[in-house]
Amino acid sequence: MDGGQKAATITLDQVSKTFDDGTKAVRALDLEIGAGELAVLIGPSGCGKSTVLRMINRLIEPTGGRLLIDGEDVTKLDPVQLRRRIGYVIQNVGLFPHQTIRTNVGTVPTLLGWPKARVRARADELLELVGLDPSVHGGRYPKELSGGQRQRVGVARALAADPVVLLMDEPFSAVDPIVRARLQEEFLRLQAEVRKTIVLVTHDLDEAVRLGDRIAVLSEGGHLEQFAAPAALLGEPASDFVREFVGTDRAIRRLSVTRISAEMLEPAGAADGLPDADIGTTLYDALARMLDAGTDRVRIVSDGREVGVLPRDRLFS
Ligand SMILES: Nc1ncnc2c1ncn2[C@@H]1O[C@H](COP(=O)(O)OP(=O)(O)OP(=O)(O)O)[C@@H](O)[C@H]1O
Image: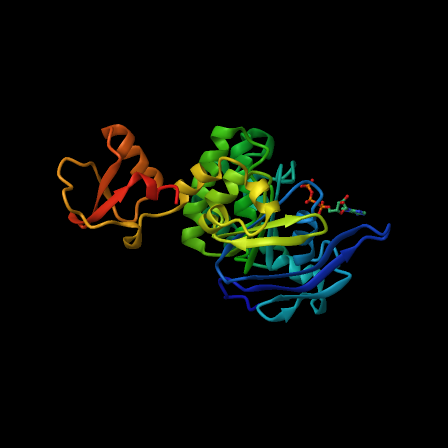
């Protein structure tokens, strides 16, 4: 976990948590998250998602197993130092109300002893990155911002000291659906730029499918049912639990995360008059083209060249 590093791997090896009252929140969980990967934890209420997240930065101490960041056992590190290297974003952010936005964003760099001018420059850079104008918002107080803006400040603050890992517990759930969709979109753009290793807890399957490189579905006791890319999770649920959890509209959801690829196609043949879709766009796009044109096939093109035909029945197979 060196300072200049961009992202780290996270390994949970048989990690368990039994609380003092005997509640077994997490039992022997194995999970391996790659550097720069955005992993989503999802599952029914009480299945142990937040407990898993908080064990990674030791807000909760595991009672069994090993938890490694870039191969280093976090239980052997000083918890305060550890938390300064790990960004943490929660619902409703928890900004300090009597400090300006700029000071809030600079919290961890200040704690790390950065010179004032560098903290300020970094805070402004981060505010820009999350789409807030530092000259407008930097000097304001949290109550002078909208809920969505505060949430962005929370993300900026978590990224300020260039953490190797970012933990997010329901980061977008306190804002209305429209703001939420915009924040999710901006967040994907941000992640493409910063490429942190992110573990994000959500209740919202659409959010999981939209944001996750992989999604871990947990059942009670932190039991890992499946850890897979969205299209794989929706296309091939590994258990009845997952099938039920992802629900009846999984076929539709799957369309929007599955890209048209060469092996889905039939030879072009008589493709005249069919609508076009580009290879690499989603099955959902192909369905939209079929519905628009009133056909049951689309002509698939790559760099303007026809590469085959996608029939409607391939959408759901
Ligand atoms: N401090 C605690 N002492 C005892 N039990 C706890 C404690 N914190 C959490 N639990 C229990 O551990 C289990 C897992 O809780 P956790 O908050 O991790 O679930 P979650 O999946 O994040 O739930 P939600 O989706 O409702 O936020 C639950 O049964 C919860 O009641």
